[in-house]
Image 1: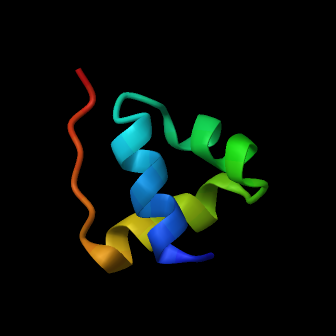
Image 2: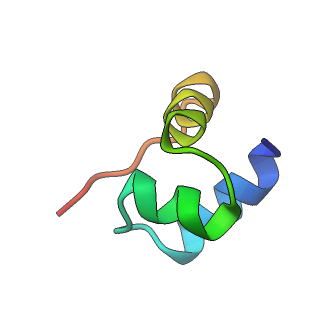
Length: 46
């Protein structure tokens, strides 16, 4: 998974769930989880 693509997606859709990102980016939810954790991209779900 390209970290820059995920970072842009988080900026564009900060309140989305991981499964929503995964569906949009064509990957599985655990891939989103592990990439977010590895890159220390933090976001807060309201």
